[in-house]
Structure formats: structure tokens, C-alpha cells
Image (cartoon, rainbow, N blue to C red; front, side, top):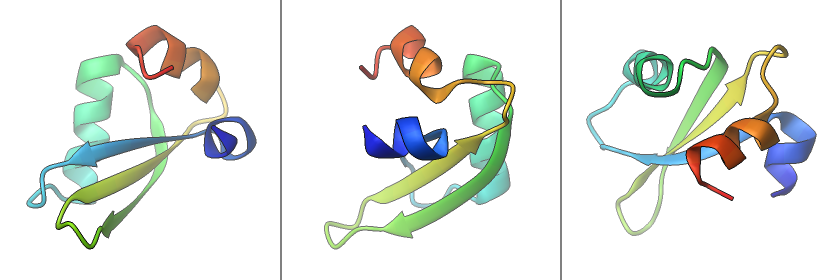
Length: 70
């Protein structure tokens, strides 16, 4: 919740083979949201997380409510 409010960032679990550019494109196609930056990490359980920072035009809290994360 803190990342959503403070950094305008959403977190997604993605396929391990997905690149940052692929994640950015998928976010645009699925939700019509422009991503400013994408950071990824692989968890100890072998899942890949994508931290997607949104453009200033989009509010992450509103987007999270719209897509059902919150």
C-alpha cells in the first residue's frame, strides 16, 4: 500500500521470461496505463515481480481500485 501511495507504483507477478519492455507493453494493452519505469526481481520462490511506476498522469491508487487489486 505504501508503494502505491508514495511512489505511484503497482506490483505484479509476471512470467519469468518476460522482459521489462514486454511488461510495459502488456500493462498498456491490458489496462491502457503508461508506465514510466519497470523494475523486476526474482523472489526466493522463483517468482518474478515487476514494480511498475506509472506516469504522473495516472494515479496508482485509482488504477488499483479500477483493476481490482485493492
